[in-house]
Image (cartoon, rainbow, N blue to C red; front, side):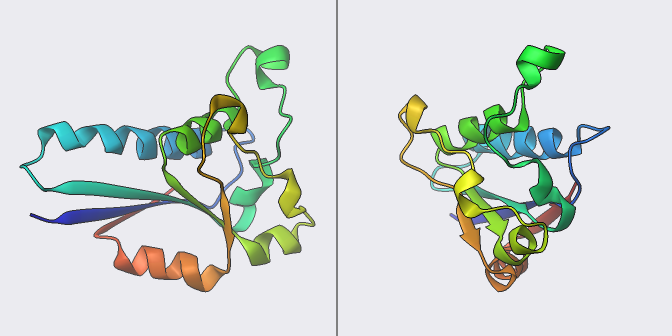
Length: 136
């Protein structure tokens, strides 16, 4: 029996690419691998946003209306709905002037989980505790 911890670290914005959306999708998908594990084994993914990766986290995105694709906000809501831990670097929000109240939530979907704005030291601890760290 064991818990395999994974850290998905988004360090680039989603502009002109899909790296942040891929990180979110992978983090959600890793929760489903538990059906392939031995009894008692678990996988615990943590999704972390650092550096320029915090730039795409604002709520009110209109990607579906403007481009016909789901937004990073929609993907994040799905993360919160399935109780995935999402950490956002407090220092980087301050660096880019993004207020914490602009972070999306999934209350409209019935989710209790919230995005956690955390100091980089907490995000670094999550990366150190992870068996695998994936950078996007």
